[in-house]
Length: 180
Image 1 (cartoon, rainbow, N blue to C red):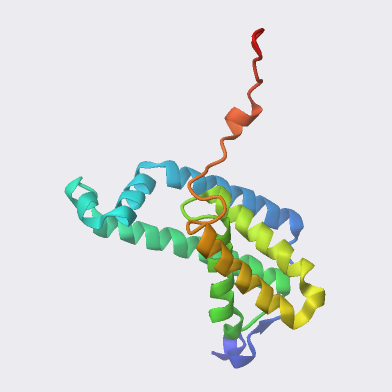
Image 2: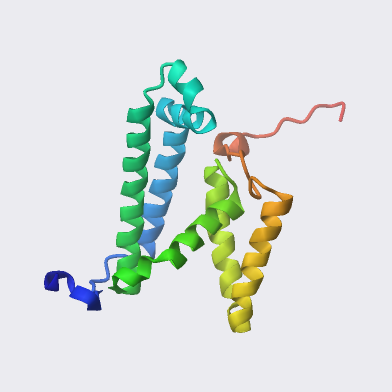
C-alpha cells in the first residue's frame, strides 16, 4: 500500500518514543506481564505448557487459554514494534525478519525460560554483549551463537530460569539474631 510507504517502508516518523517513554512502557510491561504470569490464567498457561491433557482434565479451558496467550503476546509484540519504529524512525517489512526473531528468542533463552526476570536479564545482557562485541565486526556473529550453544549445553533452561525477583522481600529489613 502506498499509504504506508509501500516497499520503501515508513519514514519520517515523529519522535514519540524518547527514552522516558520507552522506560515507562518497559516498566509497565514488566509489571503487567509479571502479574499476568502469577495470575490464574498464567498458572493455567504453565499447566497447559507442561501437559495439555492434564490441564484439560483439571478443567483448564485449553482453547480459550491458548487464545488468551496468543492475544496477550500479540499485543506486546505490537507495542514493542510500535516503539521500535519510533526509535529508529524508519521501518520496512524486512526489519522484522527471521534475524530479529532469532535475536528475541536468543534473549529469552539466554535469560531463562519461564522467568520474567530472566527474560529481562537476557535482553539487557545480550544487547550489552552485542554492543561490547561491535568492534569485532563479523566475529560478533560467531561469538554470540557459540555462547548460546554453550548455554544450551550447560544450562538447558537458561541462565536464570524459574527464578522470580520479589521486590517486597528485597526491600524488607533483615533481622539479625544474637546467635549469629
